Image 1 (cartoon, rainbow, N blue to C red):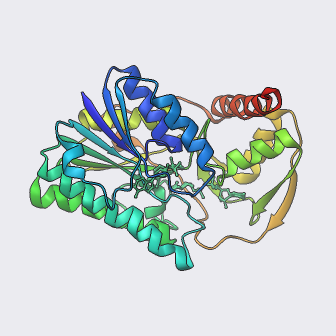
Image 2 (cartoon, helix red, strand yellow):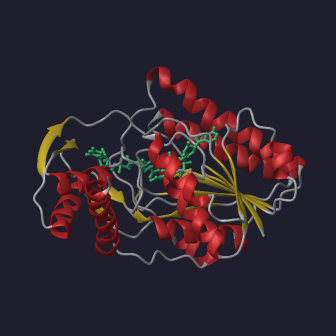
Length: 319
Ligand code: NAD
Ligand code: UGA
């Protein structure tokens, strides 16, 4: 198999690249190294990936690349490149969100069609639901995004569906619910809280902490992506949740337990664009993909904590 991964230097993309290489695929990774966080983290991942002969790196933006050439001979595309932050999608930054999340996706779908790519799996988001009228969230519910980011993720999901309905491009959209694990983006709650537990710094808690999230361990997310490529229904949308819905206050307690350190909490107001609750109904993914999340929150947090604790040891011992 020849697989192409967009966003290959990112958090989830880098885990997916590893799994594809382990499975014996040839992998083309596209990542324009957007500065949504420290580029040193992304560059280190690219350096590691390039040590594998079956990996080819393309360090450019989807908006400008000659995609036809890159997609020649590609069996399947995993489209993860996007600006991913919910709370930072307001104001002037929306132009970049629209370009990276919508326009770049349309170019990729169009080129995949022209080149006869067999399957395109798109990384969508629970943010397309907004503040859902009913929990758990089901794929059949009406989408009402609550952030500009959610609007862009839904727009690209619609594009994926349109390319399927009009031209028969085999697209599948996967709605991820708050993904965590080693290499999580530095702007996300668990990475911030574990780092603060390690360093003895304080965390910022947005709102009363009673909001809930269906946290999903990254290895489970990657498994769902692979299943979608193998057996997802063309044109379909699937929830990918972790089965570990907890309040942020409960998350803080779990992090204190796993790290053995107490967190110092500074309270801030509810952030614009944040939904109150997320909780995935994953029965469709279970029935059609055979996907069931396997990693409990405790188990996932323990692995994530090991990675964060190890980073500090590396920093202390390197010259
Ligand atoms: P990330 O920022 O770590 O990875 C995204 C990568 O895409 C980055 O390395 C960036 O440089 C690259 N990129 C962005 N726009 C690009 C473009 N136009 N051309 C080329 N490269 C580009 O983010 P992540 O957390 O790994 O998220 C991956 C995907 O999953 C995103 O599409 C995001 O919307 C989606 N998602 C993530 C979560 C989560 O909890 N992390 C949840 C739901 C959905
Ligand atoms: C995450 C990802 O960042 C998005 O890319 C993704 O699209 C979305 O999940 C999704 O499920 O679709 P979010 O749920 O906001 O978004 O993830 P976190 O940043 O981990 O935040 C979780 C909760 O912790 C939120 O309620 C947030 O307000 C809170 N939080 C976050 C804090 O209280 N303090 C922080 O410093 C960060």
